Image (cartoon, rainbow, N blue to C red; front, side, top):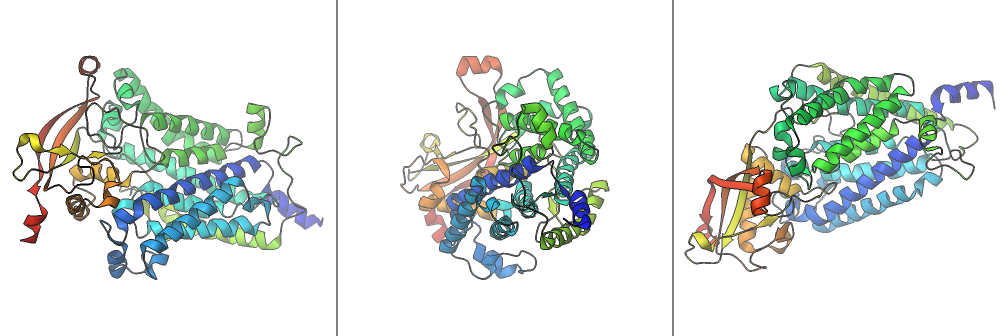
Length: 492
């Protein structure tokens, strides 16, 4: 091997992040598989040809350069199914490790195709895809495309880019909280969070009723994890490994106390990827994804020049695109979950810059009666969001219930109302695709004569109320969202 090649490999490549490469590639593959499968079940009733926010109407008013998507060429529900199935199969192949066994460019091509397919969905998804973890998955997919295959060493430049992504994800979330709601600074935010978060989980009731002192510790721990520990990723090992392990542990707590789609799992993947092979070996006594000899699978004979040139150029582009997100982190007017270019390659992240202190839920009900009285109304049940006070909050993450999430935003005055009006119309029509988004249709497919929407104030039951009534929630009606209306009224 020529001396200059050996020098380049020593500077450009690393042999201490083979496990990290497997974690990133397969972890992103799992998340992509979930995302594409969810598109198969939810996209068409939400955004399809008869969806609540049809793609065709969006692409007619949006320019391709502002929202790049293959669906600008044409949209049909059949094409969406093809895209989603192709994405799911491609993602499954990555999880199985098939592209990683080929030359360096094979996983690159596979991940770039997956990135384009999912970006095409996200960029036309409107409110139903307007979540931070959507752009995070797009960014992660593009980034891991450049990690290469098992035939080449891991490029350290991509390791640094992954550190930069985790740094922005954690620090952005920490800063938006510290600069935002006072509850984060006076350590009271977790007095509300477990009860008012968008979609509580099975343990959220228990977490809410932990002592107030524990909630203070949770907030302090959040500040340490998100404001302090991210800086460790720029220091020598084992400090980046320490930061990554803490991220995994703290995100695991969020997994068991709430439902945030795949956001926490994406952070866990990134956190685990901060851990070096040496630390993995010290912790476990062996290396995950190792070859038969107990060491990482051997790389090929050297670095392909094309690989070095392409990856270096891509990381240089990502560095240039990082200027605005970096300025955003330093800004007193920090943006939360924002993309600065339509390809969503380097984004700004954050969550819960303002705390919701009360939980208001829109409850939708219908009636078969010609002139319904108070006892003639039956409630539709959603899969994840609170409804029946005796139903324990379910575990749905990493699955993302997009309709349920927008229902949480509805009382807050965000997320738009056009989709909700169309949703009520679909209920009057007993549209099968829309009804499949729900947990229970109280009319078993029969068309109701009337639908209405009421606003209720929800709170977790106290331990005493829970013992006495068996209810997880206590609620009271506080207002009207939509007065009763029927298809007959709309036709007049």
